[in-house]
Amino acid sequence: MIDNADIQRAADWIRSADGIVIAAGAGMSVDSGLPDFRGTGGLWTALLPAGMTERDVGSLTQGDCFVEKPVDAWQFYGRALQVCRQCTPHAGYAMLKRWAERTRHGAFVFTSNVDGHFQVAGYDESRVLECHGTLNFMQCGEPCNDAIWASGGLMDDVDTLTVPALPRCLQCGQLARPNFLLFDDSHWVETRTSAQWERLRIWLRAVQRPVVIELGAGTAVPSVRMFAESVRGPLIRINLDESDVMGEGVGLRGSALDVLSLIDAALDRD
Image (cartoon, rainbow, N blue to C red):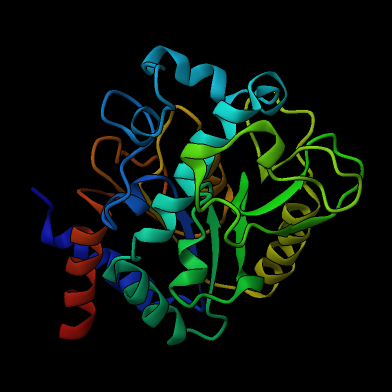
């Protein structure tokens, strides 16, 4: 049960902020119909190529998977791209955007999600940092250079992929891959994400009274939680299971959409 006083405190911080930092993990996408990634029934397991089981997921999250098993890897991540594009961002994205538009400096998004849903929901591309990259751009698998390009409709027929039909680098003709970070990945082209980091640093220097709203960020890969805790200002942590907060902040246990709706109602009342 969420304490109404905690909801009110979160609303007060948002109202007095001159900029909102949105720190979003996989739990933010769940309310849009996108399954969480890990575990039986999770997105990773549901997307496995025919003949593979949950224990095979690990091999498809390693940096060399597009070299060692390119067809399986492209079927796996091609399906992920299809699922992400089929899901519509839930109403919580619009709530956050509306709150941010009331502040002097607006919002900046920091997310580990590779689905591109913030951009689909109308957030300015220059105000989004995708710390693990995105499914929506591709790069050379080698890589032969730092170029990236839009994924487009290349993944429309993933189930019939063969090696000759796999996406290729536009420069050298070698196999291409999505521009996101895998485990033990020495081939990821991080130029786009590095530029996003620089824009975030510049934005943060101008914000005097930030509030951080962290949504659905887990502890298995704690990139989002660590970033959220590093930003000065109060932290509103929204999580189904791990909502405890150290220092100035409030933990709100629940789904992203449910808790955002409660805060939105509190903001409308005042």
